[in-house]
View 1 (cartoon, helix red, strand yellow):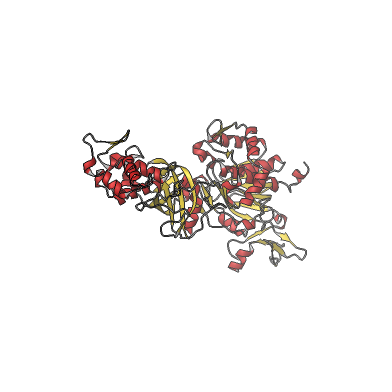
View 2: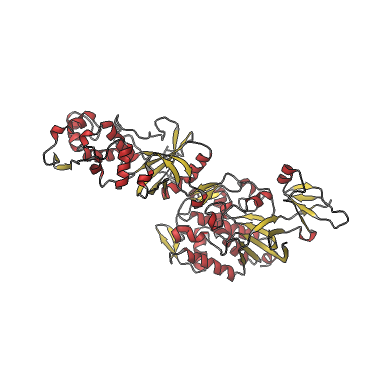
Length: 570
């Protein structure tokens, strides 16, 4: 049986991750008596995994467009505690910032430095920290009207009286009572009148009391770090609701390539998300929006500067409007960086950046594809020319095309067939084309050597239907055309996001309409605040999710402590 702790705290914070620590420190600095409860054996466990163990704690290019979900809430939080506030805060507690390509890390390059600095500051501010605490219930305050009826979550119920005993009060959400229509179920708790105006945090050993409560328990990403969803039912019992919770900043199971054969390959690439039946994210000029909220070039141009179509009849590619050949898929969002090919599918930073939208589409049952451009710095025409030089000697083809009045670089089937006839091959294995010599590879695998990782070269040849041992003159033109297209537009079908265990953050959270966007206070339960991942906000890679933790933690801690007597006296 849990015993009641007689101390009534000004603020209790549940969850000692990044947001919870910031909330506790902020409230304590304003004079509030703060208790921080954590179910792990030490605070900040999830911080240790950020930035590959180096803790990328913010970003020089801090902008609202880098966040998804409720951007008004983000804007308000960044106004109160933004990039410069973050840098000053951490410098003030001993973290000397180091900026690398706009990404801020501690100069020590170790995430444990950040965790240790927060832990030390909690102690200096007088925050009492209790670890290994598992909360089983949260009882919200009850407000009594003059007629002695109870107001529970903004709804009125008749007061309950035990026969012959002092008046007691019942706590339950209106949603729960309406659903169950039963006041004798196990979720009902009775509390003494003296405790009716405070929160009660129930654990197996103790019941902690407080005037204001901040929840920073996280969602489901990396459950081993403590974000296991154990607080969900308690939050729902207070009347709150959640949007769909999905993995974000994660890899995806995919099909379309022989992924087991290319597992372990890392390569620079541009990835573009296609979703069936969705409208593309375009700016006013019709250009696609990148995952960073910035306009990017269309990855698949069909015309050269002269306005001539350079795709050729044998080459497929995405249309300028972003739809595939069937017209059912729309190009949604794109990103560029180091792509990781795994035995299950695709991963890496560019995949993480588009993951929120892909996870959402898959959750809705929409067919979802990713186009991979393995040569993002080259046009399709330039890739085609390179491959034709390797397989057939395109320079010679162009020479003949010019003579025949064909625009340079345009793929001419007749010219290719003539230029690659066995009769034109020289005895020394080289083709003299003007002042330029082009190697005649003995096989398709040799022709691809040096372009991409060997495993990826073989996978693309296989996808195009070209045997790795085939000589150039044995390769049909339509298959060579398919290979060129695959290099710029390799489509893979996403089947599912990786599990929460492998996600860095989650998309979704508490329904935004139930929270005050300026204070992060619940609109349903006065004195209840939320911070961090529980709210429907998530950012792209690069320190944005930690910035949200610092900003939302500050905002919740500041406002939760505003009503404390000790703070008002300061």
